[in-house]
Length: 113
Image (cartoon, rainbow, N blue to C red; front, side, top):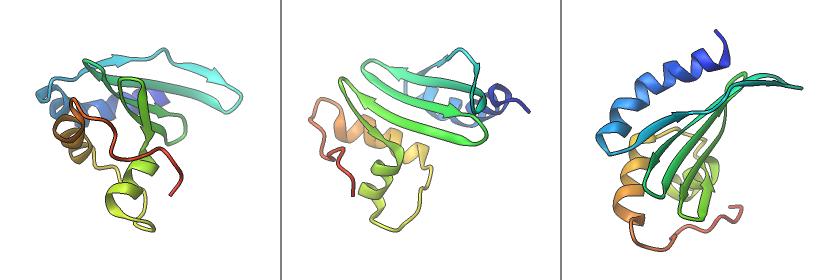
């Protein structure tokens, strides 16, 4: 499977959950770089964005609200604690984006934990 095909398979899983929470999917333009083929996409709701990149495996995942953003691995360390691994808890992240941050300032800094 190409990175784009794999990313699209992932959107079949995330799409229903995110759509139900008001997010719309925007597929990025796939390409080919020095590391091989890649694909990306993002889910958008107002000023909130969940951005996903895929090359040989899931790569950069970023949560953004307004002008502030946080990488997935930093977010998970803040939620679950140091040494808990890099879990992909999309539903938990979306609920957090909708209920905790909406209209508030970031409670988690983007510093390295």
